Length: 254
Ligand SMILES: NC(=O)c1ccc[n+]([C@@H]2O[C@H](COP(=O)([O-])OP(=O)(O)OC[C@H]3O[C@@H](n4cnc5c(N)ncnc54)[C@H](OP(=O)(O)O)[C@@H]3O)[C@@H](O)[C@H]2O)c1
Image (cartoon, rainbow, N blue to C red):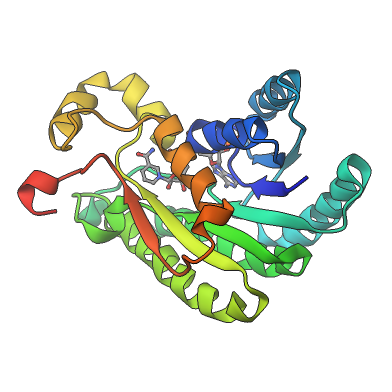
């Protein structure tokens, strides 16, 4: 059985991806930050459908905890699956929310930096020796890395960094035949930005109208692409960043 680790598996895109992995017979370690209860429910849902999964706590912004996390990962791999390695790493966990440029604080900058870029880089460094040669890494970047939404300059820039790093990491790991790609969602109705689309449903329609297909994405739309990119069918693809947005801003040249 192949095993995947997905960060931010307790909500939104990560949750949908964990469930999709389970359906396809892949064992899943999903991580949560604030919502242990949701993560446990997802494990139960996967296992009820004959999959196998475990939930572990991980705060991507706390690099000092990564050694302990790696230790628990090793114990979980061994105890649950009799393995000392895993096959797929999905660096998906992240925080959103914009801040007007003239009001932007250092705390906000550091939160986005540490969670969305520095965390995935050093977590991957910590785990990469447990990934099987021939394994795969997918980073969840964002279509905002190539656009310019007011208030999202730091978020978008650090997603650009993640996409660029994807390319460099693909080069670093090519000798081990590990594929490294990014999937970049457009606006997606997850729990992102503290549930911004549930709190302000009026944000949805204008964004939906900007897509070629007339709606915003659902977590399952993104999950299916991530899981397919992990499949052997995508074995010849590495160092790519695929936008999955239903053609967001396609009609305005975006
Ligand atoms: N939704 C969009 O429109 C959109 C568009 C482009 C890209 N993305 C990217 O998609 C990824 C998933 O986001 P989502 O839309 O699914 O949002 P979401 O529903 O809010 O899920 C975010 C996930 O990240 C985890 N997380 C938050 N802070 C963390 C931290 N400090 N350490 C570790 N994990 C943390 C959350 O865990 P807890 O819930 O347990 O705290 C949750 O599982 C993110 O990288 C985001 O940047 C989203």
